[in-house]
Image: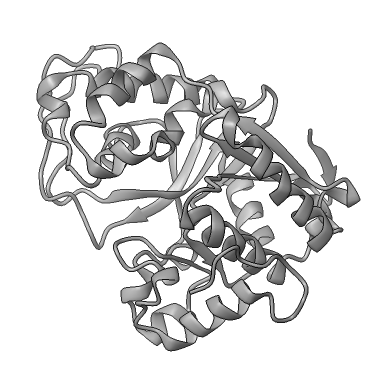
Length: 318
């Protein structure tokens, strides 16, 4: 899947989960794609991997793919640059989901919110490195810059890159309770109050490394422990799960802060202007129209309406 061009890894593998029945799919996906293609300097090298929760959503997603090929004819060297994958679940995941859906209103609504735990079984073997993006984001710079950065960071030992958030460290900790010594040899298992956390809305992974599957399995095993599981936050359960392992030695690299402005609709103009990527995390989604930045809201509406006729049009307005 890769070839060398000026010592850069190509294609640029970008993955996102698509739910055509929600605002994330009807609006969020369009904003992500339109903003990305607005700045992309190498659209011919982009390969989109669209991941679905179930086979039933394939037909409506095929319509999205047709629209993408028409709107962005250069992606994938003119081949359409898209692949659809239906999320594949393993027994461990199903057991975990049965527990989590009764705990968190977020996780109860969609298995898709736990997508990281299914990636090793869902994506094809040999895919190499990928960037996973949430569909409540907008790009404000060229995704190729981010790709080249994480492609250099990731190898067989450093298998994950995510935004390291030291402004919001963990305020609670999880003590070791019955965790396998294989996972955590000779050390206490804890997330300290002052420990930096990782945002998993934007994650890069080297899928060819067996450490990715080991990391996912380690997370699943740890949160099956009742005392650890009961300390997960109700509204951020999946983020906590991933951080339990990210905090340990799985070769996590940090994505620079300019590539992740979380809670963008709560932030001021200066922070937004300095950011290459804005994430509408939290309750203020841009499609609700409740955004502190009028400029950001105006740009989102313009992209959604496809005013410059160079992209997709949202299925619902705001």
